[in-house]
Image 1 (tube, one colour):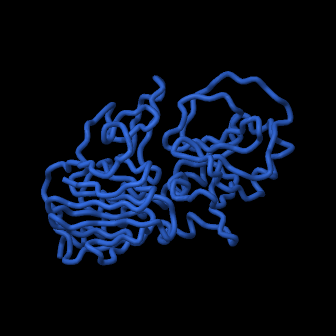
Image 2: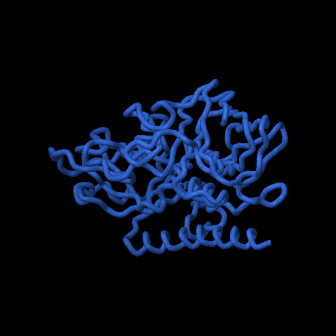
Length: 325
């Protein structure tokens, strides 16, 4: 069991999401940084879809009531285990009674606490993820609060090296494939979408300017602050299906990027779609940080996907080597 000692709002149980139900209005949900979740589970020998705790408000503190293996991935949340510093992207064994505390990140927005076996909450529509908008899934369909207890699925403990081990974070290992601009803006590749032609007068500004992630942002969507963009012709559109990554432009002209809890349908004109393989980076972008959209095509998306999968496979090979010692 895991006892929640302290937790801010919006910390939830998440896996890789609820697939195949958007046609009936059920959002995917799932981890905002799926790479961190996949790698954390890989480090523990879990299936990559095992449920973990996504932490985005701090401080967050838990007590373990039995021996477990854990992995911390995602943002560097200055973790301390029984008061001793614990490195990010690190896996180790914890004993009953030990306490783990996470603080406001040095960089990034969300940390992930993965446990051997995965968090044991009910599977609903094929997923253990929390749907905050639907008030179901995860732990009672809500955010975690002090006093909650989470069960852990039974399974053998992985044979971790004494003291634990770490992996190189993907942002560091794949810097050339997932770059940051000289001014610190996150560069996100996007492909022009259905109504792109309506924005020809402002299209160059859409790509050229830096956008700031507004405080009016959450797991459903990130609203971008900057010089507004407008279509040359106002059109009345029927609602259409949405997926994470779609960039819509409401009448005020400040784009909205659909995120993990994306609406299943909408009617604002869509100017672009951020490639799926870049969304984990956006999930780690904090409120107030800057992004810049880079025009891309399917070949760019395939190359980035191959680089990311190569990194994940490399982590797997390292773990196999550790197991042979």
